[in-house]
Amino acid sequence: METTAAPLTMPAAPAGVDAARRRRHLIGVAILLVAACVLPFLVGNYRVFQLTLVLAYSIALLGLNMLTGYNGQISLGHGAFYAIGAYTAAILMDKFGMPYWMTIPIAGAVCLIAGFLFGLPALRLEGLYLALATFALGVAMPQILKHKSLEQWTGGVQGIVIVKPEAPEGLGLSQDQWLYFFTLAWVVLMFFIGWNLLRGRIGRAMVAIRDQPVAAQAMGVNTSLVKSLTFGVSALYTGVAGALGSIAIQFVAPDSFNIFLSITLVVGVVIGGLASISGAIYGAFFIQFIPNVADQISKAAPWAIYGIFLLAFMYAMPTGVAGFVRILRARLRR
Amino acid sequence: MDQLIHQILSGLATGGIYASVALALVMIYQATHLVNFAQGELAMFATYLAWALIQAGVPYWGAFAITVVSAFVGGVLIERIIIRPVENAPILAVVIVFIALLVIFNSLAGWIFSYTIKPFPSPFPAEPLFGNSYVSSHELGSMAITLVVLLMLFVFFRYTPLGLAMRAAAQNPESSRLVGIRVGWMLALGWGLAAAIGAIAGMMVAPTVFLEPNMMGGILLYAFAGALLGGIDSPGGAVLGGFIVGVLENVVGAYVGTELKLTVALIVIVGVLVVRPSGLFGKVHVTRV
Image (tube, rainbow over all chains, first blue to last red; front, side, top):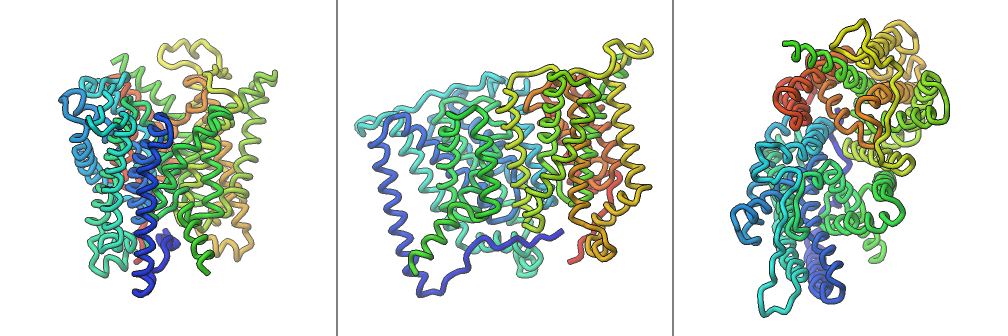
């Protein structure tokens, strides 16, 4: 089977251009952050809640993008890790009375282990087969969550209701605004870590494994370790996102983590842009707001539109919105 | 003991459905080396077509024939229009196109026919055959139809020039082209056949699970499990695998609890892929570095 994928990233620029580009990059990120901080004061509470979900999704999409975009392992079951993260946070808060902010690193750690363990058998599976196995994981997840033996923890079909965290006194923020900033802080942290991970040695190893597995091994990359670690880290990101998302929604139930959640995440990664960090943010906006718009046409419309967008992007713009922005910027600079 | 026999027999009946969907998956895999994630939704959509025809007053077997033919044409068209452009693209692009097809057909069915559950008629008599108390006639009938389809496929691939050409095109496209086989059309034909088999499976399963846009979700998973168990490149193996998964699912459902039925499929899939990726009857592939 042909394993070489078309290169999805641009080649690295020479050193002189690099410094200028990095400065521009930093300015861009700073502007984006300021905008993100001002935004919740300009819109109503419901919009702030939606934006919080966008932030949570962007972490999940970054995680999935590491695995699928950078490392070339296709996962159609990342909704399962999102669910594990969400349930870990919910159970810790509901059964153990843990404060919400403490549950997030734990949810991440649980998912890291779960992802790493699933990544081990996944090592033997390539391309299509991995897609198949993860697809099965995504389909089976709601049933596992509903199972009787877990019911005392998961609350069965009813799920768990989470109390919305109060904003610290003296800040003058509403609950929604506080949760938004809390999530934003996690986004900044996770994207910073992700950016460092991907531009460094490990990131290059990941891309090398995707494009030339044999050559990567010959160069001394421990392919099995990098692949299963990528799976674990990717699950960690998705789990953190799941925990943040469940706190924002204040509710977890098995049927909200069905296979369509996993597919939604794949849609977000593809539309946002494979193998691109900024793509996670574009993709998160897409999966949060497009269904809202499409819902007004018909209950079935969001998925029809997802499907058509997926096809259109695969044929016309395989690098997603991030690739489009990159081309646009290159054109404008000329 | 009586209950176990009952479970095994009804497992064989549902296994027949899985076997035919698995067969459709193997067909496409043999022709294109791809696993079609949209197979279940294609079958579901075809079943809706049959339902609409029956509602319009067409007799059952008439609707059956029209549905199978239009599913065949639909399969060919999908290959020509949608799959063709990504034929040589990276595997990720192909998987995403399949996922796109899956969600488009799922939502189209919901959009056109609504999400309410509909009963679907069975062509077989309501009372059990030969006075037995184990299997209903629908279960027996769908098993028989699965076996007939398998037999027809075997004859087609083994004894007709067209079947031989299709096998050649799948095995060695370059050489086939040199001897004058139109490889592209053979692939399209493979898609058409798979869609037609899927449509038959859909119409056989609909009376038991009822017709709704998500009815094939679980079935597709069991079919995957069956196809992998039997060997993804072996049609006979896929059918046997489908029957095994059907029995396993029913027995586990009866003795362990119905909540874990889908997990059985997950375990079978991961287990087979890890322990014996080529399945029971599949060819072992050796990759040259």
